[in-house]
Amino acid sequence: MLVNLRSNLCSPVPLFGLVLSVVCYFFSPQPEYMMLLTVAQLIFVPTMVKMVIDFNKVGDAIVVVMMVTITMLHWWSEGWIAIILALIYVVYTAFIALQGVKRFLQRGFTNMAEISIDVGLIYIFIGGLWFFAFIANIDTGFSSLITWLTAIHFHYSACLLAISIGLFGRIHKSRWYNAVVVILLTGPLLVALGITFSTMLEIVSVTLYIVAIYSLFFLALKTKLPRGQGLLLRISYGSLCITILWSFMYAFGHVIGNAYVGIPEMLKFHGVINGVFFGSMGVLAWAILIPESKHQPFHFPVSQIRGKLRERKDPHPGLVDALSDFVETAKLPHVIPHFYEETNQYRLQASVKWKLWFKPFALIYQGLSRFMQQLNLPFSSKRIEMTGMIVKVDEQQDGRLAPRAWIRKIDKQTTFVAIYSKHTTGETTYMNIALPLPFSTMIGVLYLYEDNGDLHLTSNHAGDAGIYLAINRFLLRLPLHEHFVITAEDETTLTAIHKMRIFGVSFLQIDYQITRK
Image 1 (cartoon, rainbow, N blue to C red):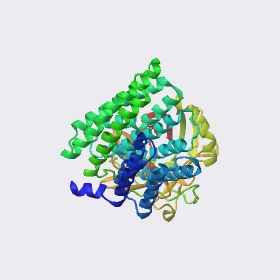
Image 2 (image 1 turned 60 degrees about the vertical axis):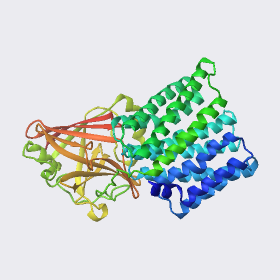
Image 3 (image 1 turned 45 degrees about the vertical axis):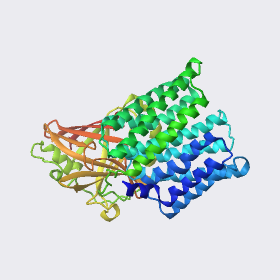
């Protein structure tokens, strides 16, 4: 424990921030309450960020420059020098936010704990912008003090809390935790919007935030943690259970026009407890032991084709060489494997059904899809014929095993260009489908299984299954899922239902009628 504390707290950069904080506390001409934000800028945020990002020497130098800048602002808090210094701080927060974006692009919408850390790193940039607005006296529509308090809000309640609950999520896993994280990550923005536009929204968002904070504290109580770390973390989260009530009383006072808690009380009680107990205890807790990330990088092959496919004219009979490579075909009607292995012998008719709530987005998207000639689905649900052909794709150009492209058209306009391949992880063989997009490729990795004589293909399964977006060297999982059900009507006819969801909500269904020519 002592070794970890020395490593995480006694390295040169955190110690430098501590020394500068002491200098500011004893010698700064600024009001004493200004230290609440300064301590977060010089100690809490840099220390927590360093726990989740492995900085090189350039990164450490950027942090040191920021620390000197914040210290100088205690003596040069007005005029053009102050604006330049505050702008340097904004650049620093943008650098930290960029690390959060890079982390996210390496995973995408998977692993809630790591997403929480990503969002915390991004939130610090918003805090930096509010701090700049305070120093530069920009008219935000609020008083100077409220602008400063909003900067504090995004340093503590957004950045520090998001990173802390992300680290906690590396230890604790549950659906309850996922719900708590969603509320706590969106809470800072909802509260800020409520303060700006609607007192009722402020009340609702603070109420949800209270429920999430108390739930987080309960989860911390029931989770087994090292003794010293567990005590400090529970003190940190427990202090939020107290201070959040003051936030509620402040917001409720605005609704009824009777200020039970004012800004001075918020500074003395809410601010000090958050700084001393939430901030310092939380940093100490994680400095004792930083949990390892449970996320495993993606290792399956990804198509290297970006943009428009350079077609080859060599025809290929089917989407797969043998459906038995993916699923046991003994219980499937013969027509199902035959369709996948001899796809060119079949005709497709399709009915595209957009969900009502998604239709405005589908209408807007159509202009882009026609230009890309990809995922170019009609807006109407009228049954139409899809013509198509399957051609070989250069294996060296694609980078995967035996790729072949299924090019489907409606009225001579390209609807889909899907490049089929496969890969095996462990004992499972997945269908690996690439849809080239401008400067990127969408990847659908599908798991196949048989159920009551029907063939199911789904992205919603353990292992590699999922829908991904490949951009440059990044591969991120998207919040999309698709599920196909292939049913044999007779020896020459199939029906297929293709359902798609985003964030678990259905937005598209395509019904296919497939008949042998």
